[in-house]
Length: 113
Length: 111
Image 1 (spheres, rainbow over the protein chains, first blue to last red):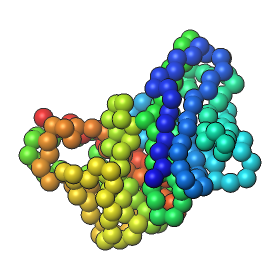
Image 2 (cartoon, each protein chain N blue to C red):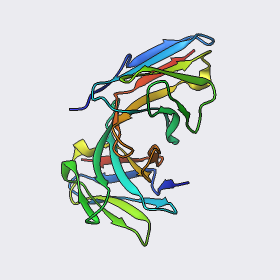
Image 3 (cartoon, rainbow over the protein chains, first blue to last red):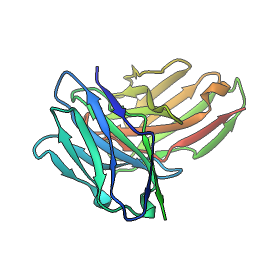
């Protein structure tokens, strides 16, 4: 079975600074990887996904992530954060077929003015 | 745009009540899911369904049941609500096994 570990439960960062949210997964087969964002009192929204091809994936709101198969990681990055990026971020993995997404426990990003 | 709607944003129920949470999607997706979200625990899968009248248990099915009589609607049922079922409930749907689309969530409080 696959699993996802988000290494930081909370990440505070100053506005306009860069940020990296870390995600590691475990799986014995090839995976598909996702990052979702949840703003306060809302559902989850897809930020970006890796299904195949280029290991550098660009998403919405200036976020990007890099799939590293050897390190089983899919870290999320943004070069300059804004106050509006304050939210909870979830990494998720799927192995395809009829299997649901497996989510990490989330990382709460707080952007400080 | 895919739209997943949930019947209530906030719900307050008493212990022992039977509770229905409804989820409707408008994109003809085959797959639908119910999660609960609790601080520090992330999203945990309760039940999912790949077809009408079909259901599969997720990681934490105890105390819950589901119903899918129509393709667009997936209901979560708490037969006898308990205080430990106070949580945020999220519904999702997908066309395939990859990207899931989420509803806005129902924050349920059981007193």
